Length: 64
Image 1 (tube, rainbow, N blue to C red):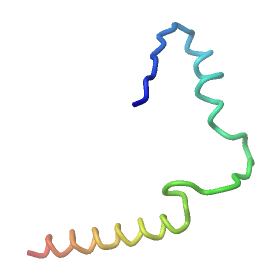
Image 2 (image 1 turned 90 degrees about the vertical axis):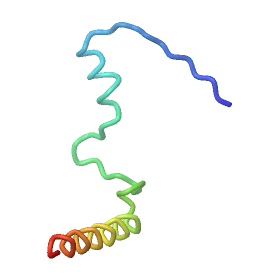
Image 3 (image 1 turned 135 degrees about the vertical axis):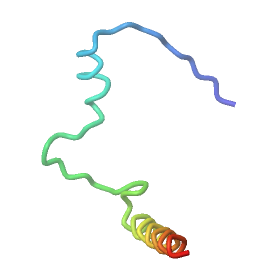
Image 4 (image 1 turned 90 degrees about the horizontal axis):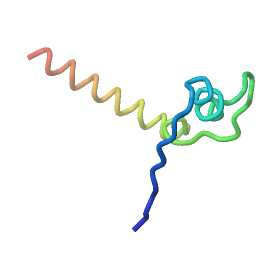
C-alpha cells in the first residue's frame, strides 16, 4: 500500500505555467530518444488496426 500526501499551496498562475507545467514540454526542435505508450511504433500499428475494424463494423451497422 502506498501512502501519498497531498499538498495544497497557493501560487500565481504564471509560476504554475512556467515551473510546474512547462517543464514537461521539450524545447523546440528537441529530438525525443524513445517512443512510449501509443507513440510506440508497434502500438501505433495495433491502434490503427483497431480503428479500421471499428470503422468497418460501424459501416456495416449503418447499412442495416
